[in-house]
Image 1 (tube, rainbow, N blue to C red):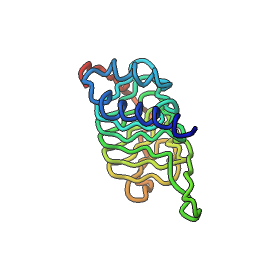
Image 2 (tube, rainbow, N blue to C red):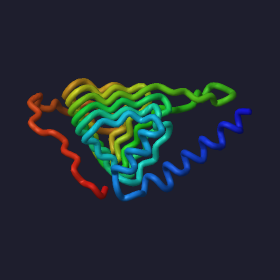
Image 3 (spheres, one colour):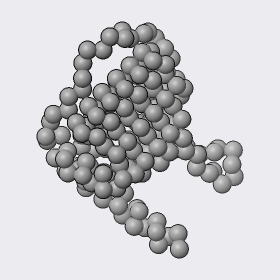
Length: 179
């Protein structure tokens, strides 16, 4: 009985990641994600070329931009706050495996990205992580532990390199129709 339910899920996943994610009008992609249960606020831009797992466990708040080519594994749940910029080819990975288990069982934990966060290109945020308000994750960083408010982190694994000014005077304004 499990396979009967599993195959339609795989088909919807294939349609989402091989067809819908390459439609050049963001409005249609957001309508599709919402129809699958994603909670996407107004003024959110999700560029083409995403690979999304479990869109029903994804929540994105207002004035947020997810650039092209990101892996969004929401099986453990992902909440992205307001005024967040996620650069090209980032990975948000909520799933892993228990390597000590003979069945190699899946392990899932949520990712929370708070308001006013910037994530640089090719950064990876692993399961169970919270990136707190105003933090910056530099390009190529691999985040393996929570990032404190207004911290700037870089490296593999990501470590604090500086503090960000707490006065943030910008708003992410996604306005591109064809993206």
